[in-house]
Image 1 (tube, chains in turn blue, cyan):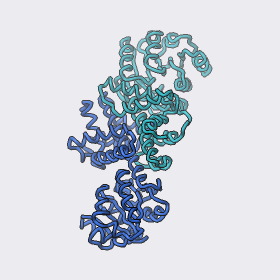
Image 2 (cartoon, rainbow over the protein chains, first blue to last red):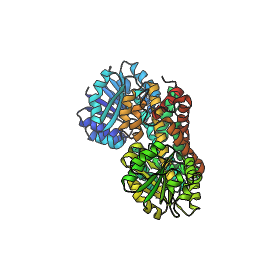
Image 3 (cartoon, chains in turn cyan, yellow):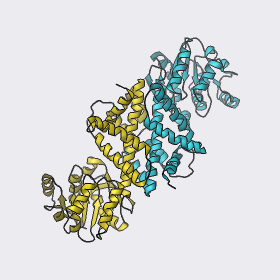
Image 4 (cartoon, chains in turn yellow, red):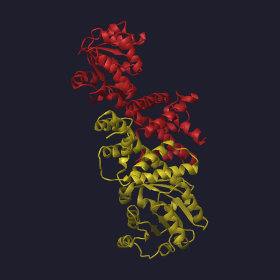
Length: 292
Length: 292
């Protein structure tokens, strides 16, 4: 396994691709943005002028595009799948719903090629540092083949199952907790604010108690600001909790807390505040409860 | 301030009273359980045969009873308030709704005595070790007067406001996060179980990610057991999330996530499983979603 085609050179994908290059793999980039392609070439990538040219004879194609639809375009419409060498591997790392992942896997495997469902978490910081968490679902052989590639991009690498979609479920479940944890901090602060309790003291107390969460410590302080810097936008959780609920529908599993949290992010976005920091979901609570 | 009357010598109250004695205060116990009174006397408490006798001329009465109703009985029906020295202080440390606390405070202050709303967290372990978190709402002078007493029982002591009920709100908000955090772990595991993801791997991934919470790390492992040891029962959260929702009604604040979580604990209790470990709220999710 030496030649990699890499589709999706955005904020996450570009540093991931560079880390693959730095680990000694041959790599060709795929992106609509020619500047990104040029920047990657300066970092050592081989030139390619189309998705099919980049994938031509490659051993693996990594997909770090925005969503499942873009993955389908690259693979099926732009010809990357057919160009991949027979027996090659498609490694889907974008965040997609489990059902969408399964559908793509079926089409890939029908051509005799392998498929790995391997979403990541850790954000841009983790992508740059090569410390991503990677949640891979694929057969043992495919996992063993991809492991050196995963190690070039990530630090915490988990083989979570052998069926396509299981990696997506783990990522989805992770986002379920993250999204609900942010919303419930907002709910708690909204009640406290209405009764006139000092939110700074409250944050200090709860950060050191059984009420603590990673999100309380990270988003809590920004929830006390009116216009905090945007670390991650409201619309990211509109999308990710949307995928959570899609996964719930596909599995026919009721997810009442996630559904409620989604409504709160959605209403914040619906007021035109989707690009605000996700801590600002608290504004929906303040509106609901008449807190100024 | 030297003589303390202490009402409620249960699993929390007894070690708290002993720590007060150990700090050099004079103390008289109040409890229906004569064995508990005897045990406290052996630890150095002064004898007393009724609530009014224990409170007679005392500087402070500490209430660590089960709920607001019991606090009212001791103070108003059993005569402890009238027996307390004029200008003395009532220190309510039991978990009660903010509204109930305000009502008790009004009646106490009408007699010219002082009132402190000072609930605790940290459990039996914290009560025994003298490391409780104490969230006190009272005037500055009352706080200064009570501080040595608080220091005998606790380690993290916060003056959260000057109005009775604000301490109860902080405790309530803390429980809101705790209860929802447990329920959302159950929701996440239920989805993952239905799709066939290994929950042990999932727990490991999420405990080290932005999805982490104190409750995920503490209750998560017990959620994977069928009959775990009971560290805290389902019915405790039926009660505590009940107080959360009561506080929400009193403040006219909508708390959709807390309300949903409460329903899940309630349904677990309604199937006769209220004494099971609170991690077993996951059984409600498994029933809802048809997971065996």
